[in-house]
Length: 236
Ligand code: PXP
Image (cartoon, rainbow, N blue to C red; front, side, top):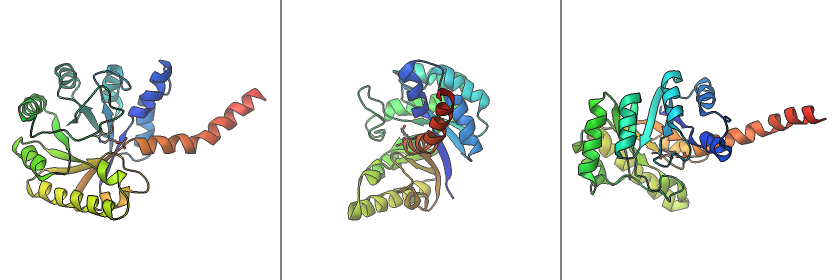
């Protein structure tokens, strides 16, 4: 059975829309833990569009399950990671103009830079996962970089349907088998929903799934009715 890492970035996105104190991702993390999350995942982006350094530092103190920091191979955020020390760091690509992380980290072409980041993080006692496309060359390079885990990008699978989705799932399963054969712990994520998650969690050896958008979207929907009822009582 795979573990569930809950990505709470979108909670911070709503807060940043007003630059206020609510909703606080620290509260959301506590509630996610109550709901059974095995891990809390946050992405400290260079442009700080959602999660802030303050969130990361407080979450380090309050999260009692695995704290997974997504970050780019970028000097300043690597330094912050080294001082706050999440349980796990997942290296991701980052482009300013993207809406979310759009593709896997290309560890083949940016090998030297990734290697430096991996060494720095592991030197601080932080386990490292690489967010990569389910591609054999990427996986073999990840193994050579001696990281603890790879997170396979499930975006292609999530966007596909019918026979294309079946084939994307087979690609993920093959990539999973190759990863495990190379002693890499297997993670996956991106675009997973209540509808498409089961086949991915059933991939042999799947250890961790990181899911954000779909969970936060559902949290809004299942909470909306109660929130309106409470406000209605106050205005009546
Ligand atoms: N894994 C990684 C590496 C990500 O960058 C993201 C998005 O921040 C996720 C998982 C979660 O993706 P989603 O929000 O689509 O569930």
